[in-house]
Length: 143
Image (cartoon, rainbow, N blue to C red; front, side, top):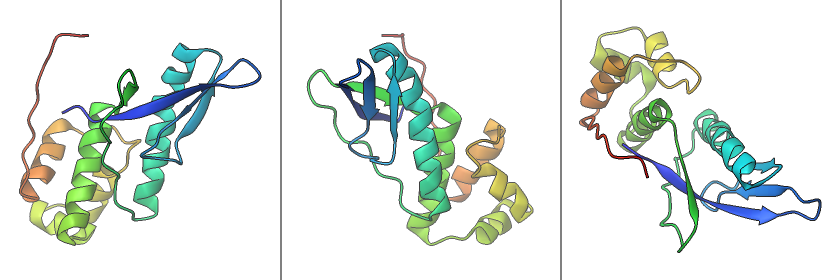
C-alpha cells in the first residue's frame, strides 16, 4: 500500500529548497538542497496529516503528479492508520464503536490512530477488517 503525495520543490532566494504539497498545504519544510528538502518533506507531511486527525478533518487524497514531479510516500504504518481513520469517518463510526467491534478498550483504538505509536500490523489489519476493508501488501523492486 503506497500512498504518495506530489511535492513541489522551489529554490528560495537564500539558496535553500522549499518543499510544499498542493494536496496538504499545511505541510511545508525547507532543506539545504533538494535531497535534504525531500528528506524532511515526509516528516512535514506526517505532522500535517496528524493535524487533520486532531481537527477531525478528512484526509486529502493524493492528486496525480504532474510530469517530472517528485512524490513523497507516507510510511506504511502511517498510511494504514490514516486509512482506518478515514474509513471510520466515511462510516460515521466513533472510536468507542470501533472498540466494540474489535472487542477491546477504546484506549487501544486511540493508540491505533496515534501516528506516533508503533502499532502491531495484525491489530491494524483487524481494525481494517472491522471496517469492511482488507490489507493488501505488495513488494516491488526499488526504482
